[in-house]
Length: 263
Length: 239
Image 1 (cartoon, each protein chain N blue to C red):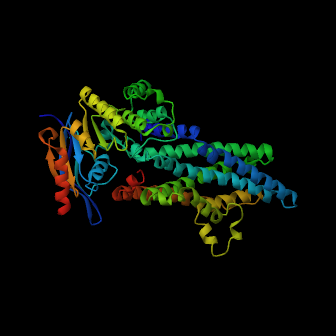
Image 2 (cartoon, chains in turn green, purple):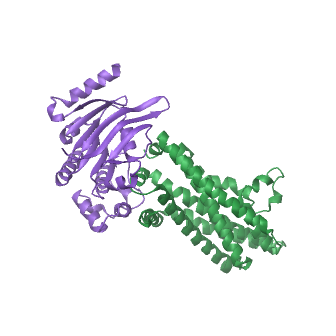
Image 3 (cartoon, rainbow over the protein chains, first blue to last red):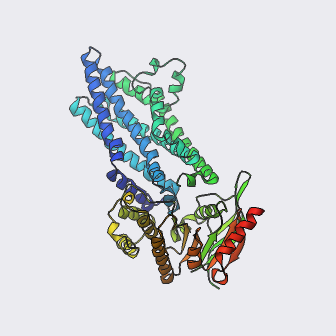
């Protein structure tokens, strides 16, 4: 991988981010609004006689959920901006490897998610007096890293689907994550889900991390082997995501769909 | 004999049972402009897409600068470029930002100077801070030309570069291409539906129909490229 080629794509992402109100609103404004909204809901529920940690867990959950949403969105939609501008062919005929192109988009996604994560931690701490870091630097950082890995894995497969099947399914690149959200038990314990769906929830590695974070807030313990299992599952997701994407891209080049997307 | 910059052998593309490009062979010499002509669906665009690595061939070999494209993809892409009326640059960012991205990707030295020089040459320097989405079709073509020449390519693939432009703009664009070709030993593979354009700038034309090369000719040796084109289109539609 050449840093120069990664830098070219990073530059495009930077120019797009600063020049597009859509990106600024999608990534930064809506995230802040969401954090504020859930912060107020948490505060309201705390006043209703509920245990404080249950109400606060909503705020903590939405902070990590936004990390997933923004990382997946950035990984997938960065390429959609090139598809919408009919510029993808230009990018792919420049002397840039596909791996470099996606590495740059993942780096942009991580930078954006880190920015909104820190921003959310500050809002939680100083507006709602909820210190997420109180849960421990390691669990918070380790959960953040795993949320990012999961989102990248999902993000590359979703953009691969658009490359392979065309822009008529582009909605998947920003909407799929909302379908996954209830299955990952972001805002409630897995036990709340119908019994038949609970095993499905545990197929998503981030489910374990949301459970872990809730356990930490309740002052309860969480089994270490589940964290190890979730991390391993996450790495399988990432490897599988990269492999599936490479097959999707090869199929798109065989069928010509990648060029039709750009016309 | 002049150096061959592109050599295509047995190039074939099948989509299921449909054969879009059928076992074609051709080459382009350094400094030569070759027109690729044919009716809609002849296989011109599929050929160009395979030459760029955007479409995987079913069979055949592509060699640029005597190197196998499959094995030397990045090295080849560094030395060629592409221009099409159907591809635009990133709409949401400025002309200068767009060209800067490609200047970094193509490792262009003194990129700021190079970008200004090219925009000036194509008469669009005053637009460099404009958002790409805010400039006209003719201006976009000229910005795209600047992008296509950013890396001092030895070969440029042009897929109907003047489609949907006003005639006066087409004339300007062709003059610019001719000037560029004179100043450098530039080779071009040029597809167009406009036979006057092809007659004006191409040294040689290749006619494609139903995915096959059906004729090669030198425009200046022909009494009428237009009549030949109609004859080939008629013959192939009767087959």
